[in-house]
Length: 191
Ligand code: FNR
Image (tube, rainbow, N blue to C red; front, side):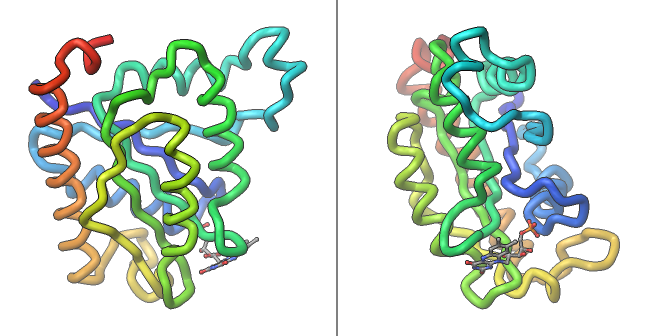
Protein backbone atom coordinates (compact mmCIF):
# COMPACT_ATOMS: atom_id res chain seq x y z
CA UNK A 1 0.00 0.00 0.00
CA UNK A 2 1.19 3.51 -0.76
CA UNK A 3 2.42 5.78 2.00
CA UNK A 4 0.30 8.91 2.28
CA UNK A 5 2.27 12.00 3.19
CA UNK A 6 0.64 15.30 4.06
CA UNK A 7 2.91 18.21 3.13
CA UNK A 8 2.62 21.45 5.05
CA UNK A 9 4.28 24.60 3.77
CA UNK A 10 4.79 27.50 6.14
CA UNK A 11 4.59 30.27 3.56
CA UNK A 12 1.47 31.55 1.83
CA UNK A 13 3.06 33.54 -0.97
CA UNK A 14 2.53 32.30 -4.51
CA UNK A 15 6.23 32.16 -5.39
CA UNK A 16 7.25 30.65 -2.04
CA UNK A 17 10.41 28.56 -2.27
CA UNK A 18 9.08 26.30 0.48
CA UNK A 19 5.92 25.67 -1.54
CA UNK A 20 8.10 25.05 -4.59
CA UNK A 21 10.10 22.59 -2.52
CA UNK A 22 6.91 20.73 -1.62
CA UNK A 23 5.82 20.58 -5.24
CA UNK A 24 9.29 19.32 -6.11
CA UNK A 25 8.88 16.64 -3.44
CA UNK A 26 5.67 15.56 -5.17
CA UNK A 27 7.59 15.16 -8.42
CA UNK A 28 10.52 13.36 -6.77
CA UNK A 29 8.46 11.15 -4.45
CA UNK A 30 9.40 7.46 -4.42
CA UNK A 31 6.94 5.25 -6.27
CA UNK A 32 5.21 4.11 -3.10
CA UNK A 33 4.78 7.62 -1.67
CA UNK A 34 1.88 9.96 -2.46
CA UNK A 35 2.19 13.55 -1.26
CA UNK A 36 -0.91 15.62 -0.64
CA UNK A 37 -0.88 19.35 0.15
CA UNK A 38 -2.33 21.09 3.19
CA UNK A 39 -3.72 24.55 2.49
CA UNK A 40 -3.09 26.94 5.38
CA UNK A 41 -4.36 30.02 3.58
CA UNK A 42 -7.80 30.08 5.22
CA UNK A 43 -6.79 29.13 8.77
CA UNK A 44 -7.79 32.00 11.08
CA UNK A 45 -5.58 33.27 13.87
CA UNK A 46 -5.90 30.99 16.87
CA UNK A 47 -8.45 32.25 19.34
CA UNK A 48 -9.80 30.15 22.19
CA UNK A 49 -13.17 31.86 21.87
CA UNK A 50 -13.48 30.66 18.27
CA UNK A 51 -12.44 27.17 19.38
CA UNK A 52 -15.11 27.22 22.09
CA UNK A 53 -17.72 27.80 19.37
CA UNK A 54 -16.31 24.97 17.27
CA UNK A 55 -13.18 24.37 15.25
CA UNK A 56 -13.10 26.32 11.97
CA UNK A 57 -13.81 24.28 8.83
CA UNK A 58 -10.26 24.92 7.58
CA UNK A 59 -8.76 23.38 10.74
CA UNK A 60 -11.08 20.37 10.58
CA UNK A 61 -10.20 19.90 6.91
CA UNK A 62 -6.46 19.80 7.65
CA UNK A 63 -7.02 17.63 10.73
CA UNK A 64 -8.91 15.15 8.54
CA UNK A 65 -6.08 15.17 5.99
CA UNK A 66 -3.66 14.57 8.87
CA UNK A 67 -5.76 11.71 10.19
CA UNK A 68 -5.65 10.05 6.77
CA UNK A 69 -1.88 10.62 6.42
CA UNK A 70 0.77 8.10 7.40
CA UNK A 71 3.51 10.72 7.63
CA UNK A 72 4.22 14.42 7.20
CA UNK A 73 6.61 16.69 5.36
CA UNK A 74 6.93 20.21 6.72
CA UNK A 75 8.75 22.89 4.72
CA UNK A 76 9.24 26.04 6.71
CA UNK A 77 10.59 29.45 5.87
CA UNK A 78 12.78 31.19 8.44
CA UNK A 79 11.33 34.41 9.80
CA UNK A 80 13.51 36.20 12.32
CA UNK A 81 15.37 33.02 13.23
CA UNK A 82 12.19 31.02 13.79
CA UNK A 83 9.28 29.47 11.92
CA UNK A 84 6.62 31.62 10.29
CA UNK A 85 3.57 32.74 12.22
CA UNK A 86 1.46 30.99 9.59
CA UNK A 87 3.00 27.63 10.42
CA UNK A 88 3.01 28.16 14.19
CA UNK A 89 -0.62 29.24 14.07
CA UNK A 90 -1.62 26.12 12.15
CA UNK A 91 0.29 23.92 14.60
CA UNK A 92 -1.40 25.70 17.50
CA UNK A 93 -4.85 24.96 16.07
CA UNK A 94 -4.02 21.37 15.17
CA UNK A 95 -2.55 20.72 18.60
CA UNK A 96 -6.00 21.44 20.10
CA UNK A 97 -7.91 18.95 17.96
CA UNK A 98 -8.90 16.17 20.41
CA UNK A 99 -8.23 13.31 17.97
CA UNK A 100 -4.50 14.26 17.88
CA UNK A 101 -4.15 13.26 14.21
CA UNK A 102 -0.36 13.79 14.19
CA UNK A 103 0.48 11.74 17.26
CA UNK A 104 2.95 8.89 16.79
CA UNK A 105 3.54 9.57 13.10
CA UNK A 106 6.85 10.39 11.41
CA UNK A 107 7.69 13.89 10.21
CA UNK A 108 10.39 15.01 7.79
CA UNK A 109 11.56 18.62 7.98
CA UNK A 110 12.90 20.86 5.25
CA UNK A 111 13.45 24.57 4.86
CA UNK A 112 14.32 26.95 2.07
CA UNK A 113 15.67 30.43 2.61
CA UNK A 114 17.40 33.08 0.55
CA UNK A 115 19.96 33.27 3.34
CA UNK A 116 23.14 31.24 3.69
CA UNK A 117 21.92 28.89 6.43
CA UNK A 118 18.85 27.66 4.57
CA UNK A 119 16.49 28.11 7.49
CA UNK A 120 18.48 25.96 9.92
CA UNK A 121 17.56 28.09 12.91
CA UNK A 122 13.86 27.83 12.08
CA UNK A 123 14.09 24.07 11.71
CA UNK A 124 15.62 23.66 15.14
CA UNK A 125 12.85 25.80 16.62
CA UNK A 126 10.34 23.65 14.78
CA UNK A 127 11.79 20.53 16.36
CA UNK A 128 11.10 22.06 19.77
CA UNK A 129 7.54 23.06 18.87
CA UNK A 130 6.79 19.57 17.56
CA UNK A 131 7.66 17.91 20.86
CA UNK A 132 4.19 18.69 22.13
CA UNK A 133 2.63 17.04 19.07
CA UNK A 134 4.32 13.78 20.10
CA UNK A 135 5.50 13.00 16.59
CA UNK A 136 8.60 11.16 15.39
CA UNK A 137 10.74 13.83 13.73
CA UNK A 138 13.49 12.36 11.56
CA UNK A 139 16.89 13.30 12.95
CA UNK A 140 18.59 12.74 9.63
CA UNK A 141 18.95 13.57 6.86
CA UNK A 142 18.54 17.30 7.33
CA UNK A 143 17.56 19.39 4.32
CA UNK A 144 18.41 23.07 4.26
CA UNK A 145 18.04 24.86 0.91
CA UNK A 146 20.22 27.95 1.29
CA UNK A 147 20.31 30.79 -1.29
CA UNK A 148 17.06 29.33 -2.57
CA UNK A 149 16.71 32.01 -5.25
CA UNK A 150 19.73 30.43 -6.98
CA UNK A 151 18.49 26.86 -6.71
CA UNK A 152 15.03 27.01 -8.24
CA UNK A 153 14.32 27.82 -11.87
CA UNK A 154 11.83 30.50 -12.88
CA UNK A 155 9.36 27.64 -13.42
CA UNK A 156 9.76 26.48 -9.81
CA UNK A 157 11.93 23.46 -10.44
CA UNK A 158 14.69 22.64 -7.99
CA UNK A 159 17.67 22.66 -10.32
CA UNK A 160 20.50 22.30 -7.80
CA UNK A 161 21.79 18.74 -8.03
CA UNK A 162 22.91 18.42 -4.41
CA UNK A 163 19.57 19.77 -3.15
CA UNK A 164 17.66 17.33 -5.34
CA UNK A 165 19.75 14.48 -3.96
CA UNK A 166 19.09 15.75 -0.44
CA UNK A 167 15.35 15.77 -1.12
CA UNK A 168 15.50 12.22 -2.50
CA UNK A 169 17.33 11.09 0.63
CA UNK A 170 14.84 12.81 2.92
CA UNK A 171 11.81 11.26 1.21
CA UNK A 172 13.43 7.83 1.19
CA UNK A 173 14.22 8.10 4.91
CA UNK A 174 10.64 9.19 5.63
CA UNK A 175 9.30 6.17 3.76
CA UNK A 176 11.62 3.80 5.64
CA UNK A 177 10.69 5.30 9.01
CA UNK A 178 6.98 5.16 8.19
CA UNK A 179 7.16 1.48 7.25
CA UNK A 180 9.23 0.77 10.37
CA UNK A 181 6.73 2.49 12.67
CA UNK A 182 3.77 0.84 10.98
CA UNK A 183 5.40 -2.56 11.50
CA UNK A 184 6.18 -1.91 15.17
CA UNK A 185 3.01 -0.01 16.14
CA UNK A 186 0.25 -1.08 13.74
CA UNK A 187 -2.53 -0.14 16.16
CA UNK A 188 -1.18 3.36 16.80
CA UNK A 189 -0.78 4.02 13.09
CA UNK A 190 -4.26 2.78 12.28
CA UNK A 191 -5.94 4.78 15.07
C1 FNR B 1 12.77 36.66 6.34
N1 FNR B 1 13.83 35.97 5.78
C2 FNR B 1 14.77 35.37 6.59
N2 FNR B 1 15.70 34.50 6.08
C3 FNR B 1 16.58 33.87 6.90
O1 FNR B 1 17.41 33.08 6.42
N3 FNR B 1 16.56 34.11 8.24
C4 FNR B 1 15.68 34.95 8.83
O2 FNR B 1 15.67 35.11 10.03
C5 FNR B 1 14.74 35.62 7.98
N4 FNR B 1 13.80 36.47 8.50
C6 FNR B 1 12.76 36.91 7.73
C7 FNR B 1 11.70 37.57 8.32
C8 FNR B 1 10.62 37.95 7.55
C9 FNR B 1 9.45 38.63 8.21
C10 FNR B 1 10.60 37.69 6.17
C11 FNR B 1 9.41 38.07 5.32
C12 FNR B 1 11.66 37.07 5.57
C13 FNR B 1 13.90 35.73 4.33
C14 FNR B 1 13.15 34.48 3.98
O3 FNR B 1 13.92 33.34 4.22
C15 FNR B 1 12.82 34.51 2.49
O4 FNR B 1 11.95 35.60 2.28
C16 FNR B 1 12.19 33.23 2.01
O5 FNR B 1 12.08 33.31 0.61
C17 FNR B 1 10.85 33.00 2.68
O6 FNR B 1 10.34 31.71 2.35
P1 FNR B 1 9.31 31.51 1.15
O7 FNR B 1 8.20 32.50 1.27
O8 FNR B 1 10.10 31.74 -0.14
O9 FNR B 1 8.88 30.09 1.28
